[in-house]
Length: 255
Image (cartoon, rainbow, N blue to C red; front, side, top):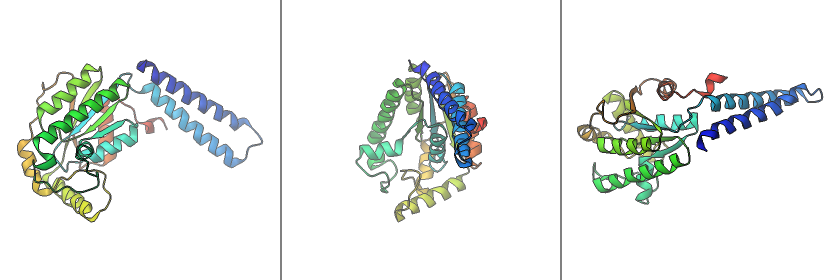
């Protein structure tokens, strides 16, 4: 059933584009209407081509790395590009703790809602949400630090059992860049300014998280692809690198 969904999506988008294209032969429509019909038809044909080229099986992209390395920025950009379901550990954690995502939570590193029990519950909830999405045939983006090998393995193996392709994106950048990002973001949180993440990561926590980071081993999870993305590059280049690794075409390549 799920394997047929891209076919029907492609078919529907193509037929809608074809119907709009018929308007281009109508002499009584205005130039403005003709332009609008052409643009809409082109967008629908683009969407049809995308559905025809997208992977047949669901894909799980796990975006991990130290705090401040741009995981959430890339996750949100990918969600905008692909329309895939996105689950963020920061949002899940605060939902479990009944804390608003935008509310700063100044627990010490590894304490409070960032302690081991809350972290285990957060990753278990991520696993359950991912499993449900895959059962519906949806591809998934997971935004979390994934500092522990056990957490990476648990979610990757669950995804593979669901016959999904799994790609782990390890986000990296220079320490100074990460610290600058963390300081800016925390200041925005305290000032009540909107940010792209619910994270409470702060510069003083960077070294503590780095100390517990467990390096990804080549054979950590068989069949899990692993690539490193330097997030000091423009977001568009990072997205292109990730999509190439996932064998997913960009919609823009059909324009």
